[in-house]
Image (cartoon, rainbow, N blue to C red; front, side, top):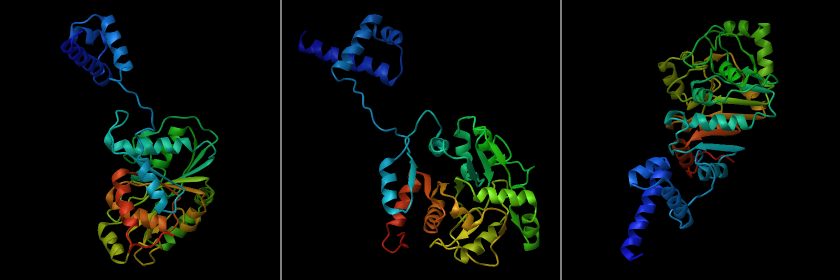
Length: 328
């Protein structure tokens, strides 16, 4: 075989390998496209592998940005950081990439969990959509935030996130029946005095693990049903120093609770009760969530973080600033 014939043959190897491994064409279709026999295509593919035209690499999945995760763990006092990569993948669309990664992470850590607390939130909707169905009759999913039992949301499975997660996992569900935000102390105290509310509150604080969202000052959804705190109220809270909220509790940049008359009265797990749960996983994505995430970490409200690449990069920049509030 002369030099010209060798070059033509090598070009054919590249084309056949590209058709098969990149374009996903069948060997039959490649044979027709290149005017070859089916056995010839098979031989060319074998040659392409043996001569290094096709090279296989086995490595860690591309779903997660492991270098960013390690960098955040060196900076933040967290047990784990999970960062969804920005790389596209056919298993999920771009809007649900973080939800897919979050669902896989949660599922891989549920085997020893018997009580899972969930603070229903729009932030968790992607996780719910990506969760696989399971049968866990030994698991109880507990609502950490008040939610009337007849409420409906845009989550496609059931009333709200906590109930939807219970449905996906085939687990028991314990709701916290009642409005999330109360306008008067007498209304909140009346709700807290109800036996079923008291039982749910006690169960929630005794959870083995919690999955929660982190809210920005752009919106206050609570359970994701509606926004019970108006935009003007949020502006006033921000003027008083609030940078975000966790489970309805507004935080300053240093992680301390905002104490002000304008802070809404919420039915749900309190700050101390939340911190008593051994594992507290927060799922939060988007640049408006960066300052709230940092505050939640500083306040000790979360032990594990699930986010996306863009949020992680900005969070890392914020927490590495010399003038920033120290984490340790």
